[in-house]
Length: 401
Image (cartoon, rainbow, N blue to C red):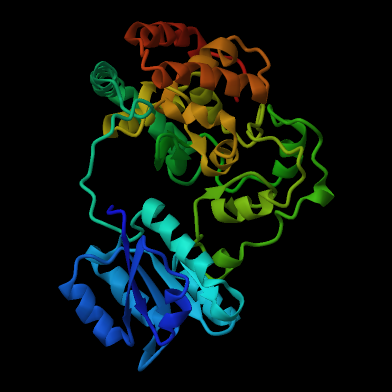
């Protein structure tokens, strides 16, 4: 920038500024916005603009809008002057991000000019410009090529070999209880996706869930008082829909079915001691076939389809229901999402496979431990193989969690 600052003043009170000017500033005065726009289009020497709010035919904010719509004037500081303070004008100037707003009757002109000097040196353009897209290496979410190839080979091979047995299991599920043999729910990993699983529970059997959530939740911290829960209140969005439809995926976490949306609303009003994770131990709603496929982890086989689609990996952190993921994204434990979601993972083989009790804190710690290798770009293919081998004993377990 030149040592002399070229200021364009638009208004009818030029003397207010000129009498306080010094040799380092050159002020051009113009009476209205029409002449001002013509001057700007013909001159490239304007470093800053000081404009009265009241102009013939329009106002200073109108001119400001025109300037910011022209990319070549975006870097020029714009200061608005008013004869007297007006709260509406002030709010509008603030909302439109005008560089500064002054009232002539209470402001020394020298203060305004010094402010302009500062803006000319430090102000940056504020309008949105077309910026070329730059590819940034996303170390946290990039799937290693070796891991992806392994996932495709294993998932396709297992599905091919297990398909005859899988058909028999599907038939047994259908014969034991009515309803679909599978279910789809929304889960959160690196993104939100449709999560596939074989159905292991009886359809509509959830009358005991309030007691179960309070008494048998594997991750519960304290007893949940029934009177503290407002989950019996119907979802207003679902109520507005035709019978049988819901505004979001249905969850079975209370004495009635509840959708994801309404659960999140009620969760914000719930007691602070509620657990992040909900997992019922020895859930009586589970069918005989369901108990078998859970104990042998056969109910997880449809997730191989998720793997082929790229939603999941063979090894990773377990994808969470939306209501659980929302809790974790609000704190430092969200690091777990830097690892891809998986069918098996570190916490399954460390604790669940051994049949031990697992606290909420232990599970989150193990999830973050696995995610560390993706944060630091230290992914180990052989570490995944080791976890898969350790998963085999965990496939056959006595408890139905």
